[in-house]
Length: 248
Image (cartoon, rainbow, N blue to C red; front, side):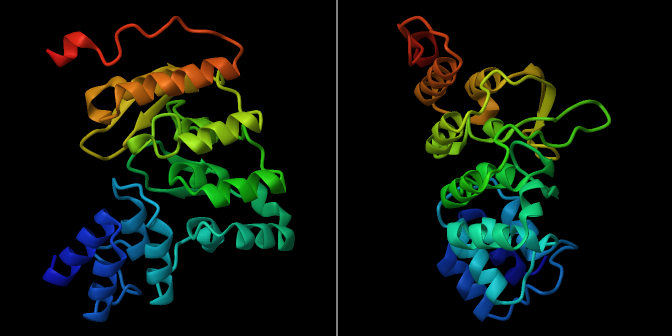
């Protein structure tokens, strides 16, 4: 990997549009594969989740990069008006399935709503729900029965809990907090890859307490409380959060 490609990957990891612009101006051609992968594939497979993603996507597209699935473009740009217009032009987009690399919850056989939820794209989520996207549509299932999750799974333990507003939006739209899957492989192909079994969104939220997820305990319990409330259940008062033993 040359110096320019390395700088590109750093800019993608940081979701830094200024650095990304500098790399593009220095001559990186995003129309060509970078280490056998497309530029947008690199950007979308990074660990980072920030509000700068759409701006980075726009920079790459304006320079000639395109995702393997062009129907993703208005979603990845978090352009609610463009999402709504695209669905008016082609209502089948609401049922469209796609597959992307994901550093966290898998996007295999995913709907556009799964994609918008995974990357915390609030305007796209709203536009998809208003247009009639099925809130509990299930993603694909692999040969081992892993997967089949709804968009809600993508937002219950997000990095920095930045997708909590989307979690509440999906719950308000009727998402089932107790929808069960046989299992999920989180971070497939990454150093933090982990497979868990017999999951609901409630159980998946609690896995934010595992060390590889690096989630805040207070966020985890707040999300669990919200999910249980949506299911009509209660939880006891939180008397040891953050956990005193772990803080010793």
